[in-house]
Length: 411
Image 1 (cartoon, one colour):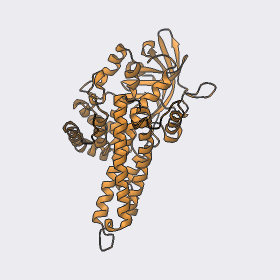
Image 2 (cartoon, helix red, strand yellow; image 1 turned 180 degrees about the horizontal axis):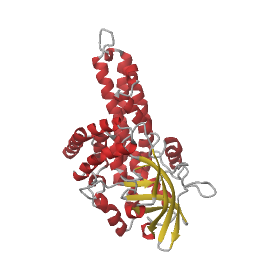
Image 3 (spheres, one colour; image 1 turned 90 degrees about the vertical axis):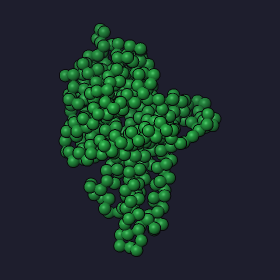
Image 4 (cartoon, helix red, strand yellow; image 1 turned 90 degrees about the horizontal axis):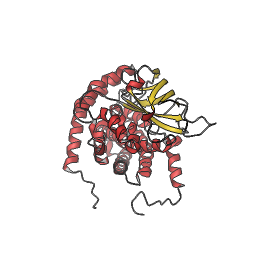
């Protein structure tokens, strides 16, 4: 099969539709969110737009076709993500909760589990939320560590035909739901009698059993409600266990492949927007000189290097997401590269572009400040580069029979 990097007519249509929605809805939402100081109020600002996105079919576009949705291509997803992340990456993170929370359901869910857990996200109305309750306030880089190490501290105790879950979770988007009673679906990483496991709690199990300890006030991604919560005696049917007890470690790793690859796309969006600001500034501003500053080699060099890195990260993100969605064996390595390289290059490029504008960028009213804050988040979220992702890559390199050419397809 020939390799082509040209967008098909259908992909161009995805780009146009996504850009239209972003310009008509997300641009203004981002402005409102920036001016609102309360985290809960910021999240509520997004709800009408969220409902509109669901109505227009964007949520179903995140569910793979074999499970009733419309997602068929990682590149298609990347095109949509970039257009939206240019205006409101926090809105995209909120809407895309099912990408992580449902990934283990697709992998090991029974037919009954798949039908029941996926159904709320095939709707064309409302604002259904999903969350992967993975991170804990004490840290989760070593979530799989067995006792006596702390590891995952959230515990699921078997009680007849149910599990009773207690523990604290943090950082995942919309753990508290819209109203404090939880999302429509929460995939909980917990320690069951048989080891680290994943148990799905539905809203009926969560309501009245979630205590919000804090809503974080983030410097960027501000419209994405991010909280620390305590789960108190959440009683879930034993039939909601995904796979077997003790299978959770690998399921968690696999669940974060798509989100890790997506970080490259988020980084591209921040770089793309920052480049547009810096390029416009350099092309129109003389700053007291005789010619626009883009005519000076030092400025032109920054722009040239930045543009090359943007294009390279975009292609890596496309390749990684394509591998994840298609089930390519190279997906784990490519997703980790996209996460690490994409996020670190993103921060580096935005930082360099700020130098083109100079001191005027050192102001919260300047858009470059916002893009820098976004880029600063990407090495930290979806598995921090140092604590999680580079260790995963190290483990992959140590796998017996690892071939350095496998990810490229040239082995």
